[in-house]
Amino acid sequence: MAFLEELWSFDPSFGSAVGRHEYDEFLTIKDKKWKDSFLAFIKKHENRRVVEDEIDNSLIQNFLKESQWELEIFKSYEWDPSEYNVAASFDSIVSNRDLSEEQKSKILKRKLTFVPAYYQAAKENIHHPTKEHLELSIQQTKGLIKFFDAEVLKRANNQPARDAVLDYLAWEEGLLKNPEPVGGFRSFRIGEKLYNEKFAFNMVSTTTPKELYESALRQKKETLKTITTIAKALWSKYFPDKKSPDRDIDVVRKVIEKVSLQHTPAEKFVEEIKKQIPNLEKFVNHHKLITMDPSKPLKVRETPEYQQDATGMSIDSPGVFEPYRETYYNVTPPTKLSKEEQESFLREYNDYTLQILNIHEAVPGHYVQLIYNNQSPSVIKAIFGNGATIEGWAVYAERMMLEAGYGRDTPELSLMYWKWFLRVITNTLIDYGVHTQNLSKEEALRLMMEDAFQEKQEAEGKWNRAKVYQGQLATYFFGFSEIYRLREDLKAKNNNFNLREFHEKFLSYGSAPISTIRSAMINN
Ligand code: ZN
Ligand code: ZN
Image (cartoon, rainbow, N blue to C red; front, side):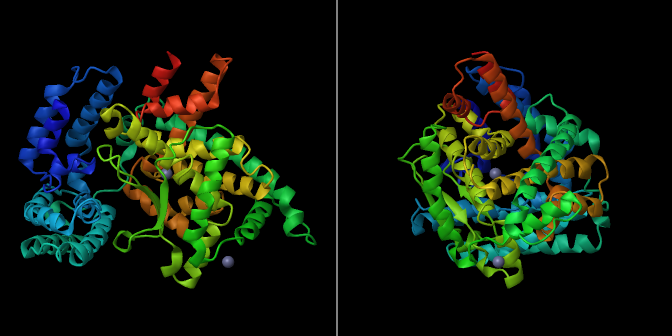
């Protein structure tokens, strides 16, 4: 498609990231020349019909408007030094199983020649950064050097490229001590105006952040009521000879603590996840919730060593141009953590929460959504995927499974589900609070640990995330709310509403914004 080819010609990293491997050997150098040509590209295509399909065209227009806003208004390329990191781009070559070692060396060799110019442009762009993004970048650049040494340079040695990364790191460390050369630090809080604008672009929605925030506050109350009822009913099972505490919140906390002790040992963590996936598939098939493609099995595996940055679980799926590649469920077992951290992690991902996690990541969450996404006849819908649609679907999948009766006879599972959902709600409160309401760290930790029963480690991590990824934490609750609302509206409109059909129709639009899918589905 002419539009995409043109886009990739000056942003080859984008093409490479979506699986067009002829762009693998390049890097996008974000210098002045690049900015000017990107703006010219935007001007040329904005407010025009670029492609025939109306939905595809609206996705392209969203992308152009958002890109323009980022270049001219938001300008994170000036204040977020962590935007400059070539790790993911190099990792996609190193971890590409379709390439021979010889091919890898060849691509890496060429790609490495762009690294000095890449970091030179970075240094020229950075102005008035936030301290938090600088710190994040320093940490990630250190990781990049390790990754270069372990995986890249042994395949294609290039000392100037390594020196350029080391130089960027030294430059960043210098700025941390004295940011005067780049105009000092700015606050990590982006403020209400930019937050609202970013929200509108990310969510493609007329719902305001304030409305979402207020909805989150209401649902927090409701969710706490539900959790309290379940916890009270479980009290005597877990504390048979003990009078329950006076305050409801203490009952909930104690029951959650006790139930969390039921968890798999660290060394069986991967195996346990592997075991659960077929059960979830069986449930989905039996209840006719969505049709699954048996020819695209999910492979649960331990995250490859060099990709293990933090403990966590994620889906590693093929790009839209390489549907033949396998889909992996990467699981980083907590075996490398200290005994204490391990225990905290395993309690968080206890026997019940682990099932919710698997629903979210795999069946019928991200993995199933991504398969439908890549089958979508429109490449545009698959490429310009909307984050709120993707996360919203996974969160919706959790609720939908429970509504279909998953774990119906296990109140512990419901308890942990609602605790998990409370986390989704709280993410929105934190995100909005941090960027528009001057929310302090102390209050944020209180919201998470006291009101939402989270572990300290989890809460601290969330606080750090909210500071550097504006708006991201709100996508989960936003996406869930909008998909749920769409479903209920269609149910009310249609006497023959069929859940499976709704799911398949919804996913057939790829990862288009929910508002776009809504207009298409409500009008058909
Ligand atoms: Zn334990
Ligand atoms: Zn997710």
